[in-house]
Amino acid sequence: MDTIEAIKSRRSVRAFTDENVSDEVITQILEAGRWAPSGLNNQAWRFIIVRNPGTKIELLKLTNYGPTIKIAPVLIVVFLDKDHMYNYVKDVQSIGACIQNMLLTIHSMGLGGVWLGEILKNKEIVNNILGAPGSLELMGVIALGNPVHKKMISERKELDQLFYKEKFGKSQ
Image (cartoon, rainbow, N blue to C red):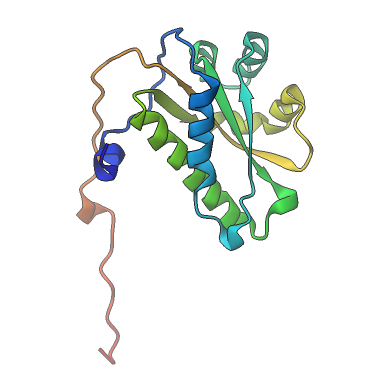
């Protein structure tokens, strides 16, 4: 799949079949994430893979998107490792790039995924449920699986609504 086509055709998928996603596929998705850019190449992202239904039941109680968590065969829980960061804002931005790499990879493989962020309001509880070290700060959860096929459309604002023209100074 062409990169621009992948970017424009990727959609947030919240409905999945019960078909399993192999460990090999998960590894390929994580590989794509780890190749995201990061300041000083510090790669401060960390992941916990969740498949256990009992764990998912505990997590779904912490978000309005619990039904998505419940039906997704796999969750990739993404963290910032504060012991390996050098600048909080840059590291959070790099984790956004990491998540986007994974979402594009999921899409290019014919799978569906969604970036869940509303669960961040309960990040300490998530860490406790997953037994995550205290140095890890929750950045998001990717729910993924084989999509229940639906034609999904999305609209975007026109580009001229999203940028400002440079203001030229008197020396110009």
